[in-house]
Image (cartoon, rainbow, N blue to C red; front, side):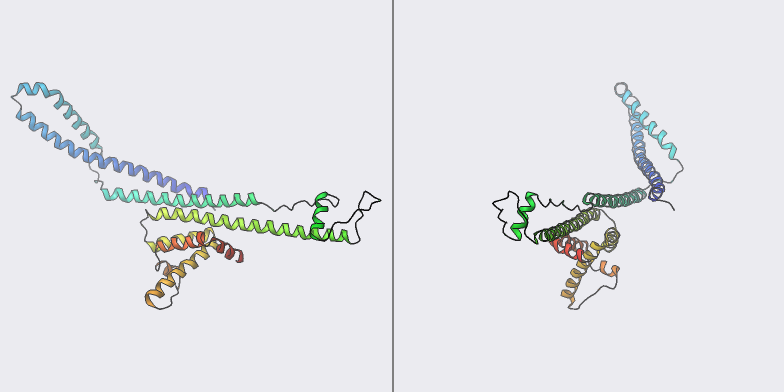
Length: 305
């Protein structure tokens, strides 16, 4: 089965062919314009030569200039000869090829951005790693001796006849229970921090992805329903949890707008119907609400999934 790299080989070759074709078409179109101008200039030079055939002073003064113009015209004709007998390139054909190249570049950019997001997510997971439990101090350490009395009971008064303190009955059990409780609290805190950091990273990646899609929306030729559908499907493949929250927020906005306009409750039957019921502005507003304004609530929702 071909891997991701082999899948990119053929499009790359096609892209090079299209780029070379676009350059050739642009050159041909420019050359045809120059050729038309050169023919007009040649006709004007011939008229000037005919009218000044008897004017020796004028011919002597401008002979070099007229000769240079004729040489330039001949050079244009020579270049134009390679396109003789071939169909004339039109601006529409050039625009079509250019649009195909731009679309392929946008597809590549999306794939690279998605790959970058996945790599960033992997780096974040490696950076968080497995939570490490803080090492407990020894029983006779000053920290433990200060920690236990502050939470459980007043400090024991040392015996005047001895410089070492004898632990009361049951104190060692109390210490073990406290260490277990503290260990559990540390583990829970670190696990919560790891989950929260993961959710925050996922939300940040979705914000960056949405920004890239918003930039592409300004230059795309796709209609809003098609573009919105592509956006939601791509987010669903990238992060299904956040995509679900986004789609629910977009659907709520569409529901409120349609109910306000018609007075009737509304539910989309499928994703296509939803995409035809909202604009890209609605998507951006919903994304802002989910990913920025109510970011904390989104983290809570993700935590419950």
